[in-house]
Length: 320
Image (cartoon, rainbow, N blue to C red):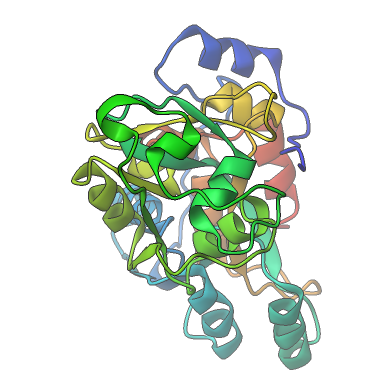
């Protein structure tokens, strides 16, 4: 399993996140400084996972720049690359990295690659109903629940008894909830948790991240996957191990930063930046805000994991 590597991670950030359940931002993050002459329209088309974050970032940015209008549409990561290519969006949020074919299509039109900007860290959580006694699974079991192909070497899992539950849960069929194929979350989960295998037809596809969590919250025998920012009181996010016998890790900041949690990922915004020209002022200032102390406080407020100051500075340096 690939580690989620974050350059320049500070001991201070790990101490802050470990010391309290409340998500903390790196104290070394620089506050956003407003500049003059920022106005106009921004369009964002892409990830549903990032929809709430984009909305909160837009609200914070507009509070600083009242003459800015930002339109946000979040129907899935697969809608982001076409919008960026066609010029219908300046911001293309994605919960997965762009595929090679998507990058090639962009480069064919513009002669250069799209610019990838890391904006947050997410734990793609596996949720069960809050009253389900299970606390952990390994990815071989997750594959057995959600896939029809068992690429990770396990077997089909149909009931809660198949993963060790007893009593009233033992013979109950597992009720799976997932995303649709337009979703970057669907693709990421397929690649990592299913070993690039196929989803079981028993998994009920949902139109959005919140719908997955709502489905599990109302289904005692349900299980589903969604971003950690969509966690509610009706569900619990279980610990995950890579293989049987391995340690299972909670989906928390320190385990994502260390790479121990197996479904940790970056969240991205892609933009169209000609490498031989400066980025337009409006787009650049929005991204500077996202990567500032205020922007990463929004990440924490929305339940995702903020990035270390060193990584934010590294990403911002690439915008020049």
